[in-house]
Length: 351
Image (cartoon, rainbow, N blue to C red; front, top):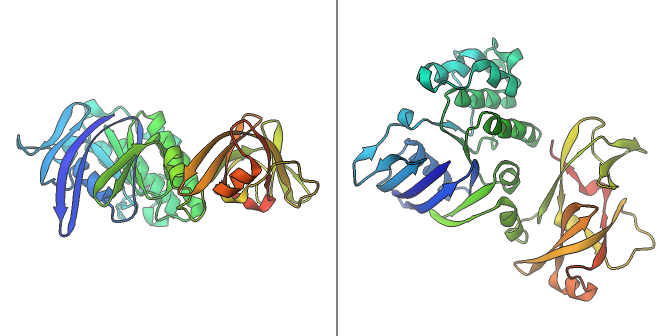
């Protein structure tokens, strides 16, 4: 996907002005509520008309105020998955899925129903009414309907915000898989840094209707470490634990991580706050934390007066957070060895 945007739009007291060029298969649009994220994608998709400017997708002009070009939404072939599933209540799951497909030109139909149902695990739901679906099932059907419209671009506008955590992180693998499996580039809109890191490769940050920066999800998470109430969140996908004395022992490189909350089979996604990692210069004689890892310091970075410490242990990486004075007192610099202590209860299972 190559997207060129140079547009302005005023709505009451709010003004949006964005000029940029984006390329990639999974691009995020990140910002606080009210920053202009949804307004921007409505302008791109044709649901709202810019006051002036130009929008170009893969070399095709979608809007140009000087030339009088303003393609209708159906001609732009941009599918949107909204916060709410917005399914047709009088139609079955199958009829909802096929709604956009039937309105797609036969020459543009490269994705079929069976492939989408298999990718989204919907085969057992096709004859069911949508009012008998759970929140996660509804969102998967809405995603399938968008994919079956065979779009050139898939826009996801806060698609997980209406779901609780347990459902949210069950849906994310489906969101990623449809983009990858069917080769559809996507714009993913969210105010969640965790969602950005799991879903995107690069991020456009919007603040008060203006483009603030284009960066990577990891750099954005590092920059926001000191501002977040949870610091930098390490994301760990772990599997195949052994369970001993009520604790889950997950393989992690040549070591293991001991975690209170886990499951016996399958993979689990965990988050670990940078503030829950305690660093020691020397091996402590005794400690209550179940995890004690010998680590090499790979890098230090600044974040609003605090220090992020990038740790490497047996090829695995974690980010810890300390105040600047602690880094100086402990003599922590790239190349030094430290011991990282982590409580078994510090890991939060996401899905």
